[in-house]
Length: 444
Ligand code: XLS
Ligand code: NI
Ligand code: NI
View (cartoon, protein in one colour):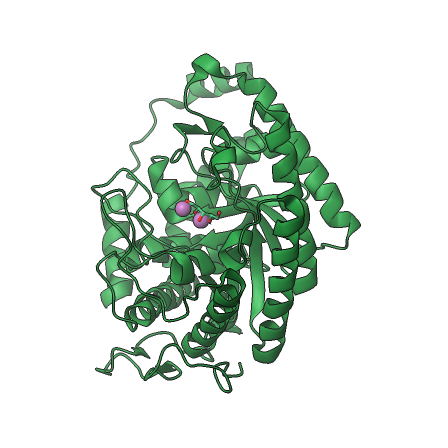
């Protein structure tokens, strides 16, 4: 990956390319566990993990919250919006190359100023896409996915594709069309729909079925347009149960997959699973990943984590090795991330205001997933856990259990088998043993 800032203003002054220095290093600006070129089961760590940087949190989010103003002062700010956007792109590519992430993700209006009209919006976006293309070519950094922000502008307060007002739906369509054009220009590997306001605040004013039909129709024509202009990648739905709506239609992986299948969209769409969204839905990260893996719908991952005591999307950088490890076990067993990636949809805390903090946050996230990858690979290759699981289900491997799986037994057959077999043994699930074993793999 070529360095980017050479010849431009350097925004993260005094910070060079982050290198692997190993677990003994006391240099905070080095990787302790992420060793990009290290081969694990036939692929390098970088190939397995496919890290991506989220433009919005890292280069747009200024730390404001409902109680206070921005705390971040970006050296790439500029009073002229197009100049600011170009400087931001320079800062972003400087960061990508210094931290060593090969992929990035952005919303349209993260990268380019919004417009008062469709034409103005398109003009800004297409001109910024040229800028991004140049930076991609200069550095080798690639686009994991882009998306349309159809939730911030007040016009989307009642939804975008599920808005009861057709004029708003049409405007949303204009954004998706432009974003797909840009995706193809930039060689994006996926295209994301996160339906932040696709849901309702109260059922008392909502025709839910009609809104879901509209959403499906909107996604279908977006798919058709994307395919017609040569988009060969995967469309991704990013489930989230709520926030900002009271109820979001893509509640969790199972709901999103049911919706996609119901409307015949499951050939072109997969899921982008975010840890903090899964936990908001009352699941674990691994649960939503497993639901996708089992349905061959695992597209990509928004790597972050929530706060166990909070009921909202706090978008923290992942540092929890245990959760990440369970996630990586699902990913590895399902054949890896393929065209997906690990996108750090995570933000610095409001009071993390040093320019090195963005590096430290990403280094921590990358190291966490590197550890998770190594340990998950060890657990899988070792086979002890898998052997325990196989044994647990072995009554279905042969005899009547296998006949049941093959659809050869009726309910009456089950009755007759049960009548002749006596009481079942109690077979322990061995949860305590398994958890101890995992700790042994982590710390042993
Ligand atoms: C918000 C979502 C959002 C999507 C992209 O909760 O995670 O950031 O990833 O629109
Ligand atoms: Ni996300
Ligand atoms: Ni989120």
